[in-house]
Image 1 (cartoon, each protein chain N blue to C red):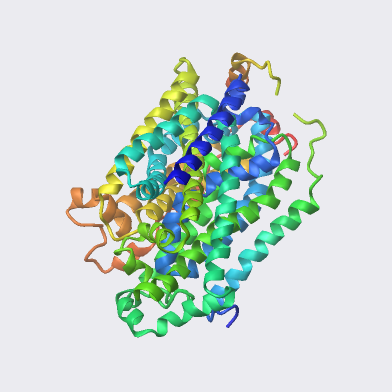
Image 2 (tube, rainbow over the protein chains, first blue to last red; image 1 turned 90 degrees about the vertical axis):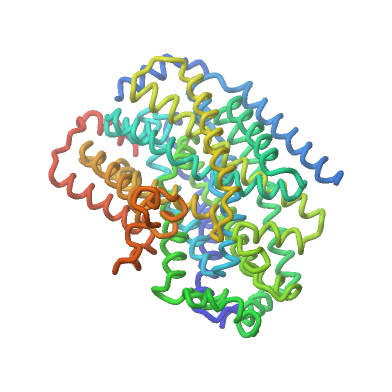
Length: 59
Length: 538
């Protein structure tokens, strides 16, 4: 019996939920300034036609 | 009555202001579809969370927790671990970079351009267009049903005004409008659910006492009588898993937990959000708030849904299911109406309105871009005003989902329609897209033919299983009854037990198998230069 819950499968998942949310916070904070591209990538003036052309080339 | 009206008007005024701001800064296709790829990590995390969590999670699955109990917390764990941690780090980072490399604006476009296949782009868009309205209708039913109860307005009148408001700001502001309003709505949702959790635990004497009271309910003779039929199906109490291999165990584990828990990875409206940020740093930061947000949403909804049984029993001597007249989707609205202070009902009304609108706006946006850009413009090569076609696609998807919600409201079934329709869509996405999506991101030599084989296999297997074999889904949809004269194909056969297994358990492995066999028997057919471009910096 943990936290008033008798079934192992239920109290363990109750704790798992809290721990996994905490793990997300720890990961996010630990990597707060990592992952910035060397050359951050969109021109405000990029027209519809230019974007269409790019995708056409890729297809 | 004045407070709810003032709060609602203020809420709509803020939405209109945010949409107008977005409209003014939406100039290009990239703006309309990807918010210019310059979204702040906090806005991205809130938008992802608010889109992921809808009235379906709070009302639909929360109501399911009133029936099945805290076993649904396995879905919360998957929502956090798979839906945030795995999704952002193993899928999000590669999706963002590959999407930038290929200048893809939508999920079908990412798959189509990666495999250089207009068929993949068009077919994926068609799957989204055909099945997304089921999910949207479920979200609509949850939001509109609650609003109609709150204001004592007719369901259909509420449905009309609700859909009009969402249509306006999706068509106006595009992705920027959707994401700015999502962030605002996500903040309201977080506050509303946090208060609900504290209120319910405090009312029941703290965390342990609340759980103990729920556990001890099963010792009450009145409860044993009311749950006798449920126990025969595997119910073992609200703080225990259903009995292994029972009908309830299959329903909880395969339909609710696996269907939605895995399906989240291939949701077009969520995948596209990875492409709205400018670097992986934003995704790292979004993980921090994303995990807590999801815990506060589904974790609270499922715990409160289960604990509602204690309060219903204390006042009426009934289980939540019995108090709600046997309709799962009514459990949460009834619980809030009966046990929470009036002012909080207004706050929670805005919470649910936010949950519904933030998800619906993204659903309509993704259906619109699927029709306008992916299907008409790119796959069929029809040269028209794509923004106009996109907006028309939004209108069509709204009309279809509103019609389904209207039909759903007429159906007086004893099952949770909201959760059912949601898990159908999540399951189809998992089977149709997930193996090909993993292949697109991780397998450089995967052939176009293998991806197409997997997508077709997953879609067809899901369709057959959902419409003709899965007992609950086939019976609700009614197509099998119409064609074959029986609720599902395995009825009255030795394999009837198999009809309890959700489509996701059958169709996803088949889709993976199809991918593996096709990959092993076909040569790589995507040019090396294109692959190099796809994986540049990934």
